[in-house]
Image 1 (cartoon, rainbow, N blue to C red):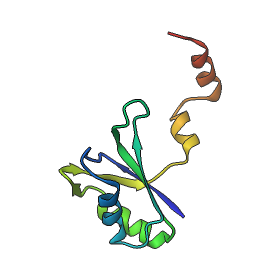
Image 2 (image 1 turned 30 degrees about the vertical axis):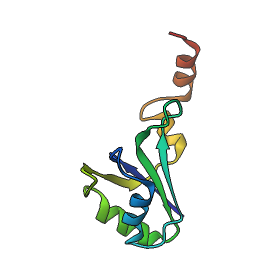
Image 3 (image 1 turned 90 degrees about the vertical axis):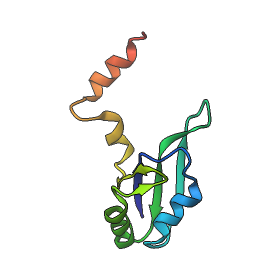
Amino acid sequence: MVNIFVGNISVTTTKERLQAAFAAFGKVDSVVMVCDRDTGHPRGFAFVEMSNDADAQASIASLNGTVLDGCELVVNEARPKADAQSGPGKTQSAMRSHRRHRY
């Protein structure tokens, strides 16, 4: 199973439209459009899961940089959540100490 990050999505793009774009390369297992929890408006990115590695890699290579609904998509393999939270050069202790301070 390959989890694909899709960024720079237009606010007018629907889940069905995104699924159709990826389905051209193989079976799409799921599409999750991320929305703001307070407003419910799309946040401009989504995650697409495909079970076939070759199909997923083909979709990443083909769709990255293409225009969908007026926006140039950024498509790549999603990083694990732990990597996204820690960020480059940040240590766990530095992140913990930052959390202690309330602004």
